Amino acid sequence: MNVAKNVVVSIAYQVRTQDGVLVDEAPANQPLEYLQGHNNLVIGLEKALEGKAVGDKFEVRVQPEEGYGEYNENMVQRVPKDVFQGVDELVVGMRFLADTDIGPVPVVITEVDGDEVVVDGNHMLAGQELHFTVEVVATREATLEEIAHGHVHGAHGHHDNDEEGHGCGCGGHHHDHGHGGCCGGGH
Image (cartoon, rainbow, N blue to C red; front, side, top):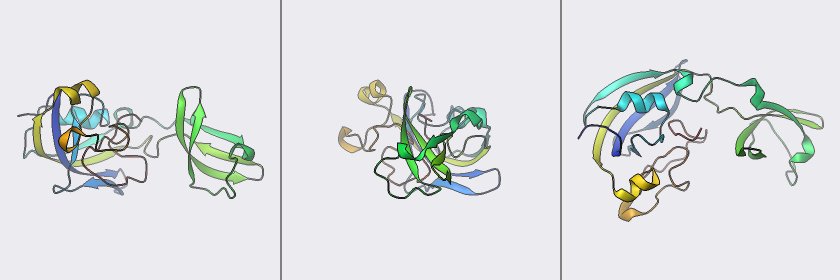
């Protein structure tokens, strides 16, 4: 069965930045499982997978507009330190969920300057070309429930991932991306 909309696909992959830095991987013995056509991967990777078959190996470069978007300076803001109530020490690199008009947005502290803090709401891979090396490990028909929910369910029909398929969409592939997911939709 070839990769097509509503097919559950298992892939082994590595993704690197244009500088060659490895940012995420899933080996063949622990592949990433996702539902094709439901925005569970960055669009550039999902497009490249369309029509592929089990055993296919390929490389694809995903431009920012089909990855995590261009870097947006408007997502960088200077905020008062007191908005971080209950946090004793603020340091560069700390991550938080900021409440915004569009809902919670992950931000990272990029600067602490006296009574002000600079936060960046861009995905850490925004503005970067991504280089994927991919192997299609397996495919199967999705269940009606998976199609209705828009993501893969784990063994016995359970939601295997803690965000119900949002973010990375790793299904039965359990690991901590640390950087907010490399391949996930919902960016």
